[in-house]
Figure 1 (tube, rainbow, N blue to C red):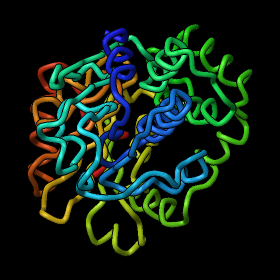
Figure 2: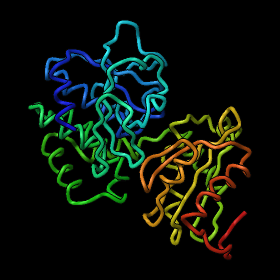
Figure 3: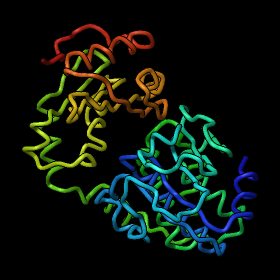
Figure 4: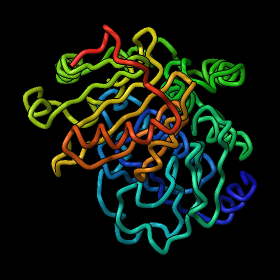
Length: 324
């Protein structure tokens, strides 16, 4: 289906580019690389996102071109390329309806919702797909593009730790470094530039850590979010601290939302496909990294998630390490 994407790019002069709400490194890096690719091809594009660029990704080249808005501006192109979404609703943007849509995704929960759908669940990141698209289109991988794409690959493979990291991922990383990406600088921006509020949130989350055999979970209340001064983006990656515990196979992170629901981040070391759990609540993602939102209160949210996990995973007994 990449050929169909290329065909549409060749036939059209302008595009709206977007990705999912609460963007991660793959969403931001891939969008910015795609924007640069289209510029090389003489095309114009407008990058619109419903949420602002997270602080750790703001140093990326061309990050300042991203328009933070809930609405596609009047007069924007009637063609849109959407990255990493299983529906237009996932973007939280108004105005995508009725446009010619191109869907590029690599999640196991991906769906054919657009006019043209290019889905490759074997790609380590959407950034890999954008890289392949750029090469096929004859675009040069500039140092700026390489920086954006390396960020996409680095973050979506969990710093080359998640399932799906293989020789192809490292080969791609090598090509991007040779094209000008600086892996040390990128890693410093992504992993060593956290705001103080995120570390305060981490402390609160760890104080709420529970362990039940091979399952660990943490939670953050709205009050704790407010006390820390944290933003939504500060919650990204906190669940991995629970997953890092020896013997834990599945980790959950519950964050209370303003409407009383809980946003849940689900992580797995590979034995459990957490995407199948997230999909039951309208979410999705990867087999080892997914997310969804469930109704509150916390006890109810936990009950709902555990009920779905029970079909694919037994957390184990409440051993001496379990905490309340």
